[in-house]
Each structure stands twice: as structure tokens, then as C-alpha cells.
Length: 251
Length: 167
Ligand SMILES: [Zn+2]
Image (cartoon, rainbow over the protein chains, first blue to last red):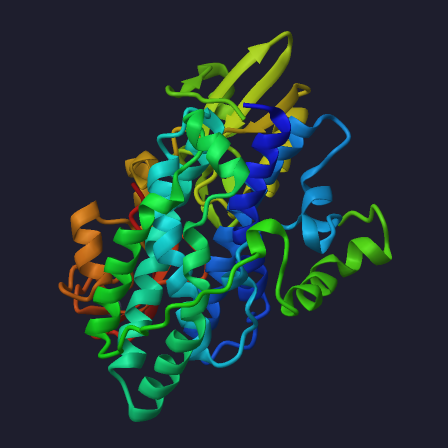
């Protein structure tokens, strides 16, 4: 696979982990209770750890002068390939959990396929990640059920979150040019094939949570091409602040 | 990033590596933790390969520095690199390591199926490291670090960490 294509393909996977990890990190000290606060930051840590493995690989492919930090902190908004779902802001807890759940289900399906990649490094990162993301999915699914089948208020807020975030789910299954190229070469995952299984798993959990599946037929997309929602700029200014203010700073 | 299938440890380097402990669990040496995958002298430099317990484990950077320090005390130069495959599993914690965990107050990981039952709350099988009772319940799937879950003993009422099974 051409180096530049592979690097872009890696960004397409890793940026989701970075941005969702950043959103979860924002909750540090702000979770609804101590246990959930710790859980959210632990998941953030897993995601940022996975991001580092991907970026280190991309940096290695990019040549000697590029570091993982350059990739994380010095790209412009259009250069981030994450889906719109993961950049959506933290509002209430039901919304945070629903965003997490919608991504976790996809994430696990993706890694389960990526572990068979012909690219040894990507396969190794995926194998490692599967173990972690299985816990994430268990955590978010449990909460969806507790909230959906909980009180009148928790049910209502979770249903609202499901209805609102549903429009971002279809983008997960779109193939970019890099995706198609990577699939052809046995390196990448054909995400369009994960769709059926995804909606089946999501549907089962929502049903158990007494929540209804939206009948929405229009979906938003653009993140994979670098066309992000308004929230992304604010997120990046927070994420990149230190490197932009004190270039080349190190801990 | 390289792929190493077998653990290759030069016995002469073992005793130095054994002095390095997991910064999160000081009673546990990194050898008992099973994170050292390769240790050989190559051109007078100790080449050490370690594997992370979890992708985001912040202890890995510290462990790398501690290894280099431990070797420099023996006047040996060491290089530490990270390997991701095969992925670390709780099976690599040695029996001595499991005992050290328990004594430190952390319940050692159960087998995969039992672990699932325990975390789903279906069975009360995680043993309280304080009083030995299995009348315990999970408080949170994530404990003080990503590799642990938070439990509480319903007999002695002490909260404790349970090291989750990872396979
Ligand atoms: Zn007890």
C-alpha cells in the first residue's frame, strides 16, 4: 500500500479514538459520581493509549522528523478524519453514554476485523484494543439499560439522546477512498459490511432498555472528509492549546 | 513495533529486571507481572522489550526509565522498546505475582468465564483480600486503574480492587 494512503487510513481509525478520548477526558472530575468519573477517564486512557500506538506507527511511516505529538497536536481541523459522532459535546450523562455506546459497538466490530489485517502492526494494535473495548461496550450497554429502563426522567433523556445522535451513526459505515484502497489490499476493513450487525446489536440493547429505535432516514456525514461540525474547532483549541502556545514544549 | 511470539529472557539479566517493580503495585516485580518479553545482551547493550498491560497504561514510561536506571547501577547500558504483539494477558502474572497482589490487597484475576460471571454480578466468587469472604459485590467495572474493577466485601465492608481477567 502507498505510504501516504496507509497514513491516511491510520488517521481514519486513530482520530476517532483521539477525539472520543478527549471528550471523555473533559469529564475528569465532572462525572455524575466517583465510580463513573473513574470509568470515563479510564476509557479515555484506553482510547488515548490506542491512539498513541496508531500515531507512533503513522509517524514511523512518515519519516524521521514527524512525531506522534505532531500528528495529535499540529494538524488543522480539516486534516482530522474522525466521524462527527465522536466530536459531539458532553451535555447530560444520558447523552454521553449514548454517544459512547454508539461508538463502542462499532469500535469492537471494527477491531474484530482489523485484527486480521495483512498489516502486522495494525493487527497487533487491534488485538490489544479488542480486550479493552469489550469492557467499554459492556459498560456503556449496561448504562443504556439502566437509564432507559430506569426512571421516567432517565428514560426520556436517553431516548432524546438516541434520537439526536442517531443521525451520526450511518457515517460509520461509509467507505472513503483510502478505505477502499486499504480493503483491496487486505490491510483495511470494509466498514460497510459491519452495518447490519451493528444495527442488530444496537437494536437489541435499545429494546432491552425499553427505548425505541428512531425511524430517521436522513443522516449527517462529512467528518471522514475533514468537514466537521462547529464543535470540533472548540475541541481542538482546547486539545492543541499547549503546543500552539509553547511550540515544541515537552513534559 | 516488532512482533515477538516467545519470551526470551537471558537468565543473567533476570536478577536485575526482578528489582524493577510496577509503579502502581510496588510489591510486584515486572517479571512477576509478565510484561518483560525479551532481554538479551546485544553488542554490550541490554536490549529489553516490554509489553503494556493496557494500551494507555501510564506505568509503561516509568517502567522503561526504571529499567534503564536498574541497569545503569550495574554499569550496563540498556535500551527499552515496546512490543504490542502478542498482547499481554493476565495469564502471564506468575503464581508468586498473584500471591503478592493478594497480600497487597488486590484480588487476583479469575479465569475468563468466572470473571465474566463476577463482573456481571451473576456469581459471588471474587474473594475479599482482607477477610477471605466471597460475599462481595462489584461497585464499578473500572477501579483505580483501567486494569482493575472496584469491589466491596459485604462481610467486612472493606472496598478493594479486583484485577480484571484479560485474555
Ligand atoms: Zn472482607
